[in-house]
Length: 115
Length: 112
Image (cartoon, rainbow over all chains, first blue to last red; front, top):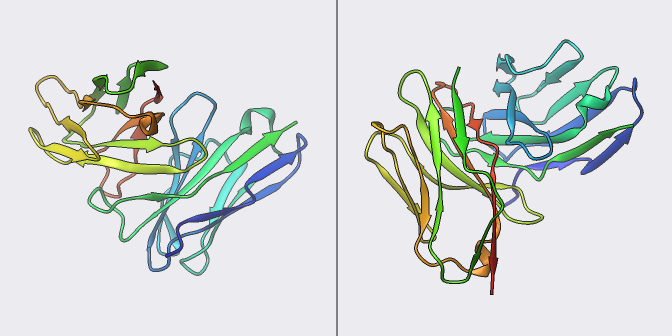
């Protein structure tokens, strides 16, 4: 079956612009996570959705970052006034129900480059 | 806060050699521990996990044992193949929602 998909695979933008990154989780997975992976580092947690609601957004670095999941399926990560330090690979993962007992399945990521 | 420390790479070894990647952690409470693998050009995949002390996770010839006394979860494989070349990430969660804390990753290169 289809795994987690993310679009676009690559995004190049200019400093100060607005970007949207999309995640399509595995069908039926209620839990969705966003992580950010900088070069040479492990992924860092950004936000977690259970259904439509953001249960934990403690990893969002500042108020330029926002994410939504209006129908409990597709999620969009939105970054306003992008900065060069936002350049990273943004990963999305989904799991059947959240928690440590449910495996997280990761998408291929969106590589964001801010010039 | 919680953290994961793993040995730096790259680790370069010959086919059929023994592989160990060290991972230690700091956590409040009782974490679940994971090893994820990222093959070239592919997304992160769960390799194995352990949820309580002395549990051993295993998959594809890889093993790791949850050692609470040494706060470690070292990854081992007895005989590596070229196809094991990848970046390996140690991770933990203490969170009821399962958010993961990752180490920096260790690149493994296996030569024929």
